[in-house]
Length: 115
Length: 116
Image 1 (cartoon, rainbow over the protein chains, first blue to last red):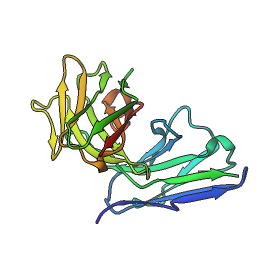
Image 2 (spheres, rainbow over the protein chains, first blue to last red; image 1 turned 180 degrees about the vertical axis):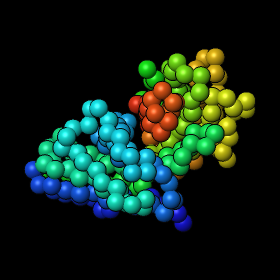
Image 3 (cartoon, rainbow over the protein chains, first blue to last red; image 1 turned 90 degrees about the horizontal axis):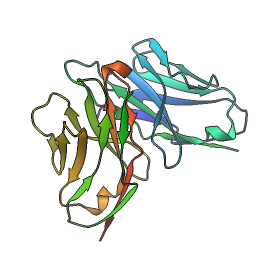
């Protein structure tokens, strides 16, 4: 089945140690998103790619970076994780809007813990 | 600005009963899309149903239907014949061109618990 796959499912890292989360998709969607979701809160958009065009949210900390080397893969890099970055990170994809708004399809998420 | 309001932080419903989850929205744009997502405790976000602002009929997907009242800016999710597996967090979300065609604004969610 076509899907959005996030690896790893759980990630533990040390305070200040860089970490990379990965997302791949077999849907061939143009748009890929990264969200941060803290406990009992709604997902918060960090940034998204429209093809290779990177769109950063104004309030996303500089500590968060992203790469999209090709259509299928997208990475979230956290350069120096702090305790406040412990959260669920969700990757999502969507198609071009073609006359109607397209739903976003989410992966299972990566739960990041900071020691 | 665009905003989603979900006024029910938590709901408890008996199995097999129907349940309505409330969602109101605020947007100044005549063109927008409304989505409902389900998030079980395992964390994945599952797309349930979509309603476009120009759609004449209420959306339905299996046991899910959307009670869309445009004049009231309300898009309530109705789940018929609830099942234990419906226990989850439910998020209402909106997208419109003024905030980027692809950007979802989520509500704070409603935690639904189905009681056997």
